[in-house]
Length: 123
Image (tube, rainbow, N blue to C red; front, side, top):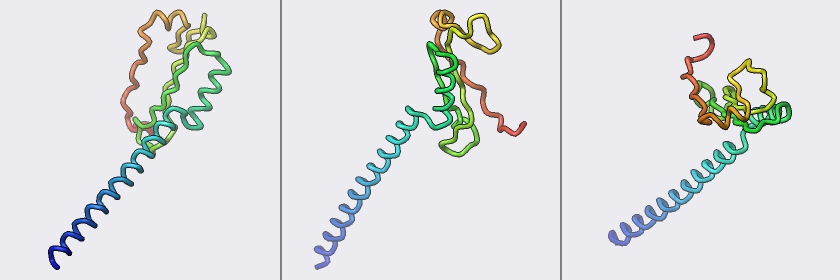
């Protein structure tokens, strides 16, 4: 009787453990999948930035990089962006670190890393 009870308890524990692992893996896969979709599509602010720049400058190259994760903000925030725009509209106008398509093609096409966050609020 004790051997049968041990066998049943072990069997139930293993089944429960496998079932828990199965659902945990499915949950993690779903979360990762949602993150990939969010990363590919961007949030509403990133999408707005991309749309407005595309309409205004007809860029040959556009990168909108959400760097919010590098700052002390809640997950999923859209507060800090780096934008790389290559457009003919910059020809003869260089108020920012901008590049024409010809300059972009001749460059290494690498974007310099942003400086580390210093904590914000004037710190």
